[in-house]
Picture (cartoon, rainbow, N blue to C red):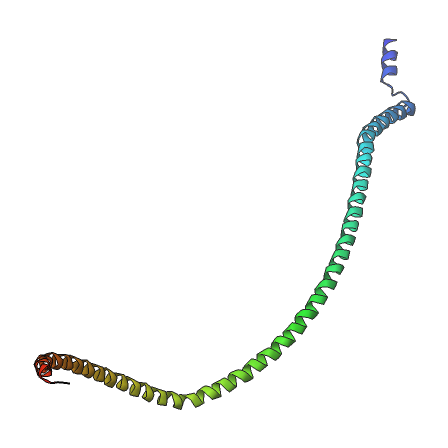
Length: 168
């Protein structure tokens, strides 16, 4: 019996698929539990991030809307100011043209003044000469004054003596 029991033990037993299916089912369930631990929190995080992204996009759209309104208002004001600047530039152009005409006229008048400037220069020299001559006359008059004083002093004493003899 020993031989027979050994051969029986050695003979392959019919494979039972139930055990393998049970094992496969257990492995699949443990794997599914692991995936559930990863997938559900990831799905929740994705939903939270998607909601936050929607919130950010909504706020960005609202801010861009306000920005567009503000830019439109400012552009309207800027357009009005640009029209005023354009009008002022037109007036400035007109004034510069008038100034150009006036400067041309002044240039022509200055050109006619140049010969007069030569005459004025000769008049200036004549006036200097007259000033020197007047100073010389002044010096001569002062000299005459000094001489008259001396003559009055020199002649005055003897004349007093003669005046004493005269009856009138």
